Amino acid sequence: MTASNSIILNMVCFIYSISIFTKTPANIDNILNLGKILLEYFLLVSRLRSLNTSYFAIMTFLFAEMFAGMETFSQKILKNAYLCKKYKKRMNFQKLTPIVNKPNAWALSPLVVFLCIYLLTSLLINDFYKIPITVAFMFSSIYAVAITKGLSLNDRLLQYSTGAANKNIMLMIWIFILAGAFAQSAQAMGAIDATVNLTLQLLPGNLLLAGIFLASCFISLSIGTSVGTIVALTPVAVGIAAKTDVSVVFMTAIVVGGAFFGDNLSFISDTTIAATRTQGCVMRDKFRVNSLIALPAALLVFVYYVIYGSHIEVVQDIPHVEWMKVIPYIIVLGTAVAGVNVLLVLLLGLVSTGIVGMAYGTFDVFGWFGALGKGMTGMGELIIITLMAGGMLELIRFNGGVDYVLHRLTQHVRGKRGAELSIAALVSLANICTANNTIAIITVGPLANDIAEQFRVDKRKSASILDTFSCVIQGIIPYGAQLLIAAELSGLSPIHIIGYLYYPMALGVAAVLSILLRYPRRYS
Image (cartoon, rainbow, N blue to C red):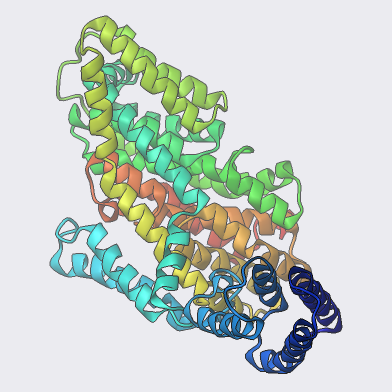
């Protein structure tokens, strides 16, 4: 107990004593009782030190004693000391954030459990639909809670729930809910079919694949988000696949791949903002470096889609386009390109599908409500996956898994090339552990900045490496938001889509070569 705390406690005790004295007649017995109380106090102070009872708790019960004469002073203090000690054993709210576990490789084991249950088993039985991804996340989450040390079971679950309730997770869930409602409502009123027919009329068959890829690149570059692009274009891509001889998984992968083009390059992308802020460089300079790496990869994939799509033919006659039914998609794409918040974009899309659908007589108000409800409940599995992934990854961070990755990869850095490779590995592994490329950049950004300064890596190059590798990894992990929502909207398995993600793969190869071959020279 510090000197200042002792002074405060003595003052409270004096006030307490006066309050007792003034309540009772001033006779010799009461004066002796007051002296006895003060003596009890001084004897108890030394005893309370051994119990580590806070002076604040003592004062609280002293004031309570002033207003309630149910127990003697010594009984109240002793009871308080016992309760404080017992309470500390039961629950320590300070553990939920300040506890810093040492870097620990074992903390990463829940990811291994998930990959073994879902990926490895699916590969062994050659069926990616046999094991639900929700079940894989459930078992890996249970395992993550079980191996967490330093907390009671209640605190472990609370820490897990903290990760699931992360603001980024909740924002994604709102997007999923509105996206499901919009997609189902648009399908019910015929907007998707009308948009597909319009696309097939405007684009010749041999340019369909390249055209969808180019549209996805342009929209994502304009709006700066891959999720919004996937939500807008995936239903159209699925509809086009149904009327051509192209597989649904191939068309879905084209949209997802193109969506990461803008996520990586856009000036308004959150990954671009995070990368440039943490590295202290200007956006346009980072864009120049990034474009020299990303544009060749995008051009190569675009040419491939042109060549591969040269034999594509529309297997059905294209019906007459109902232009009014295309309005919801025009509103969604137009507001998205204009930079409107993705939640507001989807909300406008919802309202427009309701108005157009009722104007055409496709459904009434209750039919529209039914479509919205069906779309939202259809996203239930995706929401469960997102919550469990957020909780599991939070326990990995809490147990020291992310810190282990950060420390391990910076131990043997030698030279600029090694420094750039370590930055790439850092953000890649952080992305695997967080399933969020923006969070991954923010997590390793300060450390990447220190590495860049120590080994004289150009900050424009380090920002480009952070953004590029985080987008590459985000594009190929089966539990990332982009692949999850694309799989939900197309009715596919996320693992099934990964094999056709040519642009993220080409971008990853180009990024690695840019480090190994010191390209672009000006920034290397």
